[in-house]
Amino acid sequence: MKSFFLNSTRIVEANPKVYWSIIAGVVACLVLFIAEIVHIQQIVDALNTRDQGVLGAAIEPVAQLYHWARIAIIIIMLVWSSVEYTKTKNKLGLK
Image 1 (tube, rainbow, N blue to C red):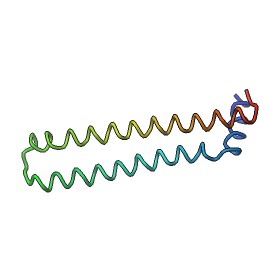
Image 2 (tube, rainbow, N blue to C red):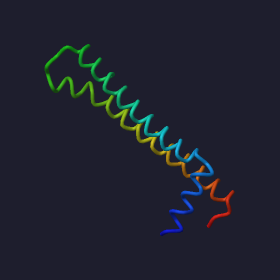
Image 3 (spheres, helix red, strand yellow):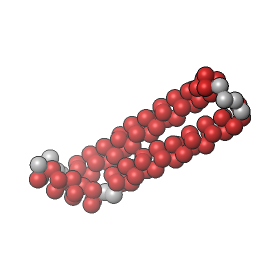
């Protein structure tokens, strides 16, 4: 376990793109979350109704779209960070 953390530290020190990929993924998810809030608020204001059924029917497809977009961003972030990690690991000759 100790060697895993030491090797991980060496890899991240050699290639900061590993960190940046994770940070970019988190920031993109936060931006999408804020965009979802604004978008849903605009829909609620445009509908101008208190009927929960109508609001739910209007908001659900938008919420699902943002949900799947966040999942896609997380998958892209994981693939990107894994590729950078593996490239650096191979470049340093670590097991």
